[in-house]
Image: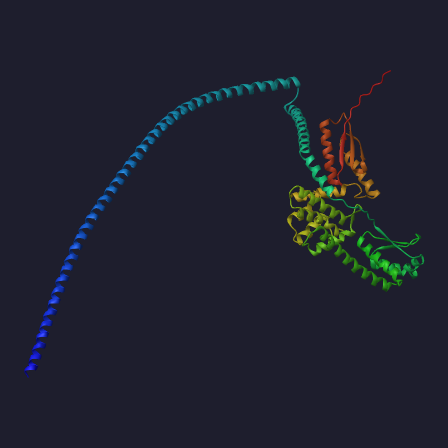
Length: 517
């Protein structure tokens, strides 16, 4: 029992000692924490004081810097204001000087106006005096000459007209010489270059074709019993078949080259086949028509391929091939069109224009001749209408329509095509006329020249390429001779159709003859 109490007391004492020890530890820890807290607060207060002092110092520095910057800005503004003030003062001085100058000019102008008024009055007085003198002189002249006012006016106008006519001729000569001097060398160079770049064989065609036969017995079979075969052939083909005494030859005559070609092919097939009768004739002619149509289309396509002209309307291609069977003055129109295309292209390239467009316009310039024998109208108008319907470019349409210069050309390509057309047609051997047309043109040339007053004689020479006009020296002076030559050239251009150009030469000659005896 005593032991248990002792143990309990020991335990209680130990508990009390532990509690006391724990309490002491807690007190010591609290004292340490209070000391740390005081240190932290003290340090914080110290830092706060330091930061406050630094902030106050920085604020003072910033305020000082701002004040210094403001002082500098104020100083600069003052300098600018002083400078602006000096400029204003200078401008005021300039304005004052200008004002003085304007006042001086105003006074000068006022003086000049007064002077002009005085001079105008003086001139008016002089004019009145001059008018009086002129009127007096007119009366005196009328009394001396015995002419009325109207008669004197007519004489004066006649003199003025003569003087103006002389000035007109002088101007014509001046500008002709100037134009020739400026353009002749360049034109000669371009045209010569174009001609040198293209050379082609030239053949002439007529209105007849010949077909060789094996023997003269074949002529009888061609004619047939009572001429039924030849009548059937001529009716189906639209040509005239001439079977005469010429040995080994039958002649086909027609102005339509396509019909003539169809008839030639058909007759050759009939002769080779030997079966010549009306039914067979119609069959062979129809077959030959199809062959010729195909040949025409192939000729057009081949031409476009050789000329490197793509995207041409198929209708124009067929008409282009048809030109292979069309002639003008004995010149094949397709060959002529190819020449014009090459020449136009060469000249356009030399002048830095579109050579392909010029070539296209040159190739199509005579396309209207493929239909001008079956439709009403001139070949330029028909060709231009075709080109419009086939959506050709305006340059091509204008070249087709105006390459003969019936109206003024609007585009350079038209001028090039017209020049190329003249070159192709005018070179020696390119075209030929019938004797009747040649004689008719010669007669018309001389008739046009002889119609002018003062012309004594006229002579067409150089195969109709030149007309020489002899004028009366007493009736026509040098100025009138120039005017006559121009008027004759214009009448020839208006009334005649001719290949190339015609030179008009007016000759006025004075001869003094005396005999020594």
